[in-house]
Length: 593
Image (cartoon, rainbow, N blue to C red; front, side, top):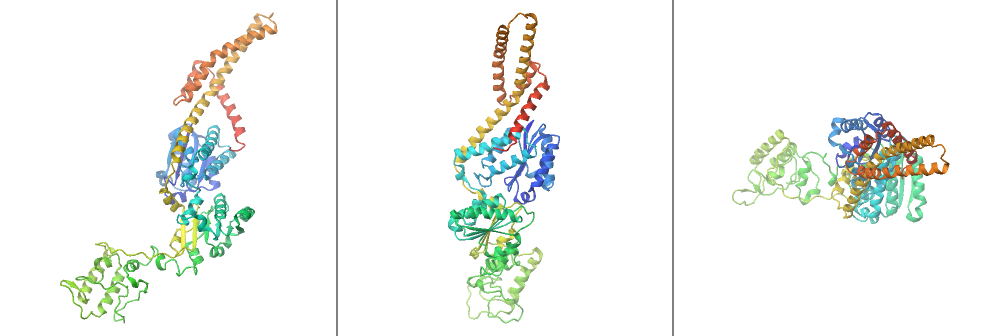
């Protein structure tokens, strides 16, 4: 049997796929049960976090195992196999061990070095033990992974290379500033009461927020978390209370920081709810106002606004032929000198504008008074010639009707970006699938950080020199684990060999008793001890050496050689192996270390 892992993570799949492939607690249980029921697998464990789903199994056939595990992952995640396959990775035998040990040390985490993954591995092992899907191999593997992770954190400075996802998320909200300075005095709303939400609440309390409101679908869990926070209020000074999920809209209007991490399959906070919550707290009317305008803004308006000069704050006025005006373009396009045939910043001014906007400008040109008394350099137009303008704009409008927008033929002049309003509501979405509508980031006065933006930010995060030391630890531990597993593989054969030798000694002593009945007990004992010493000395060197050889890469064949040389009964060896597995299982299923 051999170790196989099939999975996907933030390194192999986009967030949109990870969101859809999330496994609920019930789905994880069913996946484990179906995996051990499948033909290629004898053991199984699932490691499912907010940014990874991995299925570990002890299989007897590689290709059949990969096919079966991939199919089961697709079946229980709800993502079709054809769509899921490009994002799956496969690790086998020593590579699978190396992968889990790296995960346990935080080397494969979104935030390198974070220690929360150790708790998630522990939970995965406990679940597999409860369902009796973890046998000797996976028990040994996950137990050792926990020890390797703890060793990495205790012997190196990997903790300095990264933090928990919560801490990293709060740092992103604070724009890289000191989290305590940023959080001091703020009012926090935590949605959810699971492990991640509890960690977020505790982190916010330590950071210095003035109060924390816990909202959860199960009232008991929210109240318990609030009680725990209040018990530590003497140190943190934070006041915590629990509310129902129905109270979230009201609490949202009073919160400064919101952290959400629930197991909901749909959105917990919509962009509209967020916009309503900040309405009146910033000097804008809604998510499409001012600099907060998003990509769904009216076509063409963004291009026109970006060309405005100092008078950009002036509202656009509707144009109509014959309408009275003060000589200014209704789109606030400045009337500047340009090459003949174009009166507004040349082609760059209208690049990207819609036909309706061009027609509006054309109406203004047709009715605009021509400047008087201006002297133009040779070949440069300083006034507006309606005939030329109408002809040029008609050609541009025709192009817009054909391609949708005027193609940009030259680079527009750089325009200073209008800053967004200062954030008054900070949102941290740690759920997968997401709890908070991604469109909330377009709401003025709102700063949203979610799993996707954390992945982008962490990709550029510097890695500490301690990471190299952790990698060396992982390499050493993988080699040691492989040697121990290979040595353990030959142990039943050695035990069976010594049992056979003991039977030979017992049979020969019994035969000696029949031939020499006059021997007294002392003589019989001396003879028995001498024979046993001879057998032990003859077997000692070969058994020690065969264990050493079996521990080396490629040493699995020594067990077969030993069984062949001494004509050992395969069923006897299998019986020894089953007895060892039963003993270890009874001891290890009491819980992970």
